[in-house]
Length: 222
Image 1 (spheres, rainbow, N blue to C red):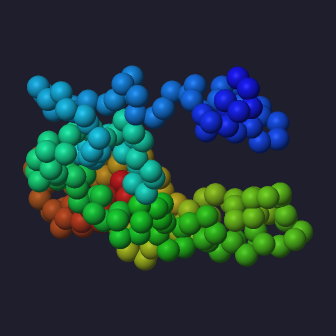
Image 2 (cartoon, one colour):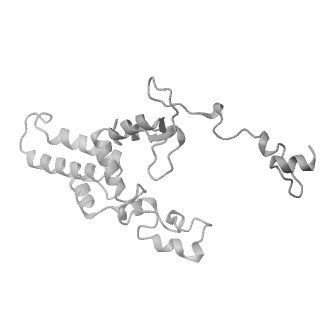
Image 3 (cartoon, rainbow, N blue to C red):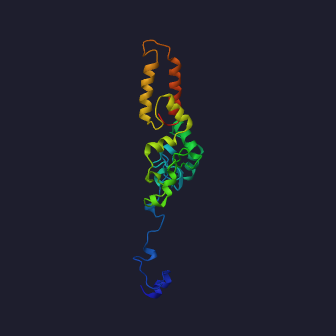
């Protein structure tokens, strides 16, 4: 092709053209091979309207992140309008999952900790910032601080209610979930009339143990 022919065709060479094919040789967007059809059953119209799938049906249901293409339906305009009119974000989720999602939305679906129990919580947190105890780039990881014992950090992170409940179950402040469940089973067997030969003198103590266990379970320690 001569320069005059290239000029008349609208393809002009600027400096050094490093393209393999001129613009006319490219497959244009929207060519027949790229047409997306409507996903509605029995519809063969062009599916150019994107509609989100319910939360539970998504491949990567992670709040706060961009939804991947496979987590959308593609409909024609008419069927997209019908789909959107009955769309339910919580379709397929249990009542507990819906409640948890709504509670998580209050803080942007980010990980949270109870006061004093996070990455920089505890009595030894100040030691993590001492230049003499520097352990690299993990500035906020107080588990690297000198003298910070795991059991001590666990006990310090417990609330007053949790400590009282542990005391009522005759457990140390740093007791684990497994220890709480094991002690609960032992005390119930000891104090319940059905297990101790019908002795009802310890029913008041049994009530205290059950109340303490429920408090620990509600706070995630059982």
